Structure formats: C-alpha cells, structure tokens
Image 1 (cartoon, rainbow, N blue to C red):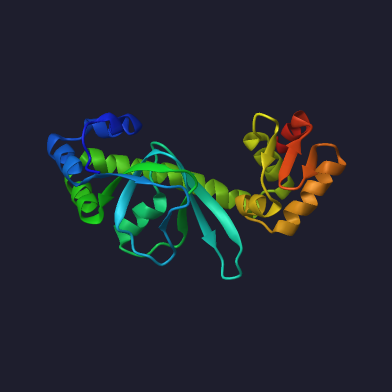
Image 2: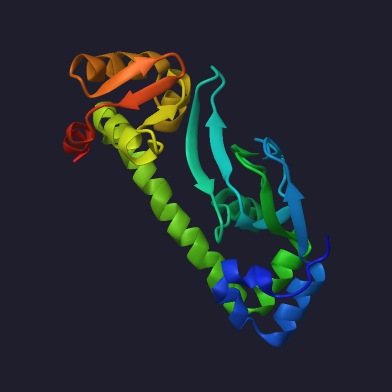
Length: 221
C-alpha cells in the first residue's frame, strides 16, 4: 500500500520537521506494509533491502548460535527502528541476527536507495536515524552488561515481575525464559525451582504464577 496521508507521523513526530523535498521523497518512496504475526523479516546473512519504521506491533530480534542457543537482543515496537537494519544499510553488509514478527505488524518500509538519498540530503532525517541508532545501542550495551556480569536470579526475578499478566503470572516455558535472559534452559529451571521452594512462584505446565511480588521485587532490586 502506497504511503499516503500523514497519520503515520504520529508515531515519528521528529519526521514531521522534514524539509519539503525530503518529505516529498519519503512520501513517494515509502510504502505502508502490513505483515502477519510470525513473519520472518530478516535472517542472518541476508542483505538489507529496506528501512522499517514501526507503526504498530512488535518485532523480536534474536541471535541463534550454531549449537541452537538463542538470545533476544531487543524488540522493535511503535515509534522505533531496528539498529541492525540501520547498521546493515550503512555498511552494506548482511544481517547477523534474525527478526520475527511477534504480532501483526503495521510499518512504513523505505527502500535502500531512498534511505541513502534521504540520509545524504536531509539533516532532519539524518538526525532521526542516528538518534534512533544511539538510543538502541545504549540498550544493547546494557544487555551485554547484564548477560556478561548480571546474576541470572536477579534478572529472572525482574523479568517475572515486569511481564506478569493481569492474573499475576506468565504463560511461558523455561526455554522461552532462557532465550529472553540469554542463558541455558537448565539454569532457568533450577532457578525457578528455587523460587518455588521459597514461595515466590508456583510452577505448572506452561505457566509461572507469581506468588510473592514484593519478594521478587526485593530480589530484583
């Protein structure tokens, strides 16, 4: 679907200040895309074809090792762009991870040639790209610090508190939690059993029920 109107700018207010020539180029070359949940947007080794600006939905960016271990690097949500996509476009190299739609996706896609043209011609677009890149890079560095130096029990406690649903639990598996935390399933299983022994959670098949929110919050802190 061609990019028409300006309603999409609500998700990217900085781009409302684009120079007239740059706005005309973005409107002419940008395409509104709708992708179903589960769509693989990119894979490791693939070249980047377009710059995606998220209007709605969530994309999970993850890395998979040769042994099959996974780690979630970050998610791209409304008003955000993908740091790996930006890096691949600027360096003209392939992706080092994969991106998968966790939900249905509504986004604006900008082809590589139009991306480079705007980057060269528009100071506003250039500032937008680099600010988005810098903000995401800061988050990536925090992830590296957590995985390298953080205690798994503290990170797991914080994840359970922050992601519990209205009923006070999470429909998830030990493997999924391991991927989120960048560790082994056995480590997560062992820690969850310890949490259960201490009365912090209750474990059932496919679900973790938080029993003591304050206890987990105190541990996470």
